[in-house]
Image (cartoon, rainbow, N blue to C red; front, side):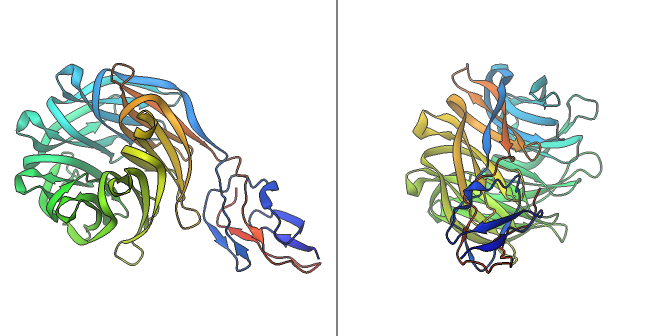
Length: 436
């Protein structure tokens, strides 16, 4: 028996579907949000993106040896990349990347720290203002911060402000509001404890708040991401607990940082960690799982209950993986970039899709066919990202390339009709939260 069947969302209707029929013949165009399955539908897999690839050629932003790249979006067309310019006395340096023409144009380099600079992290605050944090080797390895202002169309570096008067490493910063950021780091001078600090720029310059410890043990590889204006998640390698991958909520609703309970997301040695917000309640963390053959691995962190609940781990690269960096593209889609040690250390990228409520890893796309170090990726628009890295096969130059997602060809097995309908009646198969 055949029945009339409805695919809800956008008014699309298909008729005469048979029990168990493969729906891959139906071209569902640009579905970019959550899928909710009705009681008669079984998710058999797919929601595959039509195309994901590099766009255009690689563009060098520093014709010299480059370390510790970190990039942030400022506007849909403008990003700032920061890095250590080894070929210029190891100075901390920044550069505008402009994609308004559809390809990357690198601006002039601007030094923000005239000294040996390590462990660099940058975040956008407003369209014109960013904060960069770093380990200032030229000043006793103090944790230091600096405003970068692009309101004139070029980068102007402000005065340096110390946020930790002690040996500092593994710095990471995230914007909370236009005026408030949180920086996290290893405080080497305080027993290598994982430590955090509010940076306030409401006065036009950086004011560093009191330091708050979130892990009283040796702490390494410490990325942080904003979830809401008051809540951030920090992830780290907890050396004091068998190097487990661990996470913690930082709450600033009272005006100072309150660290929540620690939650392990990987009960094995964990390194090269990166984390990004997807929605106010959901984040994705990526990392090297040393306890599982150094595979590139991902995990959803959910805070809908007010505390972190770690989901199942999903491998995105079944080979040795280093230097993961992840960015949110939409509520459901993220891009992770990494060094694929199992494939000649090539710079590689992969889409992570959480539309079904768990992570589905897409096919890998190589963005640099040569040894690639320090990849850092940021979303520009829903379909365009920029990844920056050190290109070891091109004289260790600081290099960038666009990554593009094509959302116009979502064709695949969306589900199966598990029960035939009744002639003359409709039967829901899928409901799409957003259908374009």
